[in-house]
Amino acid sequence: MDVHQAVFIKSAVKPKDFPPSALPEVAFVGRSNVGKSSLINVLAGRKALVRTSSTPGRTQLINFFDINGILTLVDLPGYGYAKAPPDVRKQWGPMIETYLAKRENLKAVVLILDIRRIPSDGDLDMLGWLERYAIPPIIVLTKCDKLSKNERGRQTSLIAETIKRDSAIMFAFSALSKDGRDGIWAEITRMLEIGI
Image (cartoon, rainbow, N blue to C red; front, side, top):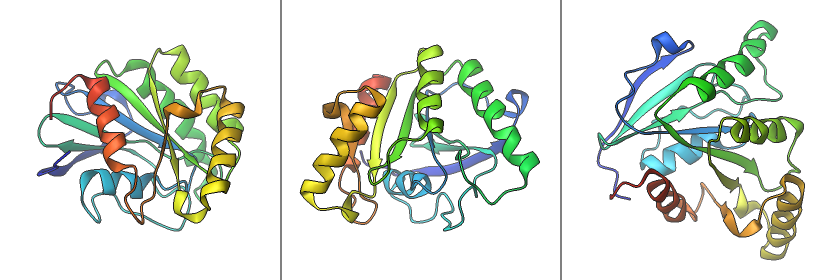
């Protein structure tokens, strides 16, 4: 996809503060430090649309980004370990679940998993939420450049077994080489049924 416009719209916590929901939305979610910000930046073709950080849990709000005036990418807070105040961390679960349950124009969620790690309880809980609210997941395995081809195959099979999904529907991605970008965009546009 050729992204000629990628603009930050706003940050919000509660549904009343979300931007008007005219455009289809694709949300991005994953464990803290899984490479979510880097993935969004590569998809958007921008180096710093979303601020990246080596500190897990930097995203503490729901952030909305307009892409080409035809869809919105939504950056949800990372779950799991985070160097954020406990009261802030406690708000994340309800904030994310409220967004998933009530956002009518949410069409898909990109669930991001680190290919080097076994999916956590948080990852499995997120898949459960997506099933409960009938939101189709796009499963992306990040940091693929850090493993050999053989290791990548083994880890992909292990992850598929853990989350009970077919490994063929998972997208391998590297922020370094940008491998996987086109395939992820193709799946997003297929799910949204929009021609780009």
